[in-house]
Structure formats: structure tokens, C-alpha cells
Image (cartoon, rainbow, N blue to C red; front, top):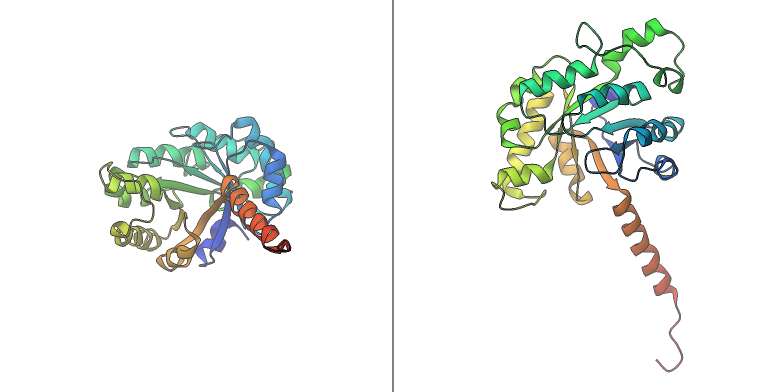
Length: 261
């Protein structure tokens, strides 16, 4: 089942967040229990070549393959799809014009202006028929427009109404900076939670899917209840730090105290 179909049905899916531009590291992530792996080109170290190679282990593991492109690199959205990605996250989509440009790169005509050339995507997804691939691509691929600013919030209805935009991806860190007018960074800021919930509500009402980056696993369920059913929850840095802490604590706890202590 496609990523959009699963999210639209209300299933909550969790994605790893890869910033290390190495296919072997991505392979390890894809082998874990995540539903998807997101390769980050904006703040992470991924680049065109690492995306081209890094999508292979994700697809081989049967996971949903997602790419976050750099700001304004809508040309890379098309390339990510041609490399085999199923979904693309575009940061700083602050206006209807941004949304239209993003959608144009994500969808084939008549919805968008995406050029034909699935040289890698077609075989990597074990596709059999080019006509079926063309016919199904617009509904199968997911265009996530990131909401991170006051301007994006003001333009939300227009962004959601843009043909070819399939969902909203909330960036809570940047949104908190915008919310506090640059005075604080706090992705868990309680003062903005009502608005965070309202963004999801409006997104679902428009027939689109809601996603976000989650910094605290203890409130993942709260976000899911709001309607954020695609959640990016773990970077390599966080996974290594959490795993190392757990293993070191367990190992030290197993040591027998020395005699006389």
C-alpha cells in the first residue's frame, strides 16, 4: 500500500531521519523497525549522489522512501522521485506561489510539469508497465509542503488548495522561532499547541495528510490524536546517543561491586 493510502486511512507511521550521507548507514536504519526512512538534504549531509545511492537500501527493505530537499530546490524534488523516492518534503513553503512551484515539480501533466524519466525509480520499485507507472504516479507520490513560518500559516488554506500538494509537514523548531518572534526555540512550546492542532485539523479537512518532526517520544501519541500520522522521530545522532546511553548504563549496572566497597 502506498504511503499516502496508509496515512489517508489514519495509520500512524514513523520515519527515521537520516543526515549521514552514507548508503551503509542508511541500510542500517532501513533494517530497523521504522516504517520509512527520510534522507535530509536541507540540514543533513545528504546530497544528490547520496540520495541516488541511499534510496536503494530503503526500497530493498520495503520501507517508504522520503527525501527532504534544500530550500527552493524544486528541481531536486523531481530528481528525488526519479531516483525512487515516494515522497518529498519541501522546506519553507511560505506562499501559494511556492506551493505551485513545488507541485509543478512533483506531478506529471496535467497536474504539474514534471518531466518524464524514471530511469532508476521504475526498476527500483519493480514496476512492470510504463503506462501504469505514468497513470499511478501522481496519486502515489506525496508532496509535503513544510509549514514553519507565520507567512506559511497565513497562507495555509491557499497552500492546501493547491493541486498537487498532498500534505503538510510541520517543522516545530522553526515554527516555535516564528511563533515567539525569534525570542525562543522550543518545539514543545505549549503556547502554540492549539495552533499546531488546528493546522492538522485544517489539513485533514482539505483531504490532505499531516506530518511533523517529533522531538519528544512521550507526546507522539498526542500529535497522532491531532492528526499527524506521519512522524519523523529519530536521527542517527539521537539513535546513537540513546542506544549508547542504554548499553553503557546496562553494562555498568551489571558490574559486581569490589570486595570491601
